[in-house]
Length: 317
Image (cartoon, rainbow, N blue to C red; front, side, top):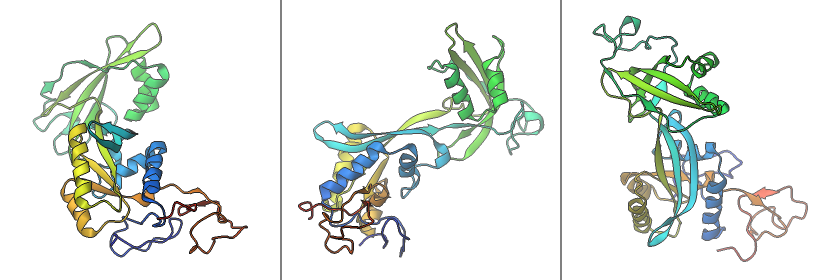
């Protein structure tokens, strides 16, 4: 069984339980379908790659907790077949408060004027740290803008006097993606004669020290399940790749799967993603297509130019 029934990808889906899986056309050879998914992963833009993390079941993470994301396809694994893909993404750990000024946003942990409930400022401070990268002017503007600073704040930060610092209030993000207690960050700008910039920061906090400047690199293993592969075979392959690559989070791209199998994979910490959302349509010629059951088959003036189910003679199962 599959998780739900669906129409052509261009049409309206009709689902009985959960709209997760629509089968790749069953006339397409297994190897060809697998290859199409890998090609789709290789050329996917950030929106598609983020979808693997946020629209899988269960989701790996939330959209607002993802920075940049990229994919490597056919990743070598020692003494095993290659892993289908590995996603690398920036997991957001800290977010800038949208409130301007030197006072924290209203929260149960803070009182008036930016002090804690005891009427004092943050109790602890971190050592000064320097971001490892040097930035061009354009890169520095883009980085500060992406952090959430306004254009006025960006200009102020870039052209601070040598010993001055810009104060802003931030939130740490916990493992569930929720905002925790605010902390104060002092940001200093270093300017060099070649026109590049570097940034130093120091955090002032009341409880736990923020784990990083903003993001931490995370990796997610992506595997593609063949319809002919059993549950145990798929799980064994995944676990071999997990151990070899030292990656625990997994997204399994599925075509047809039973509800029992789906629960089994999820019980092993594996998220599921529908293959139909990755398979790319191919250029088609209805005169040459082997799918004789299709109403467009053999029609010389067919309006179909791209098709998810186009099959050349000799590639049918």
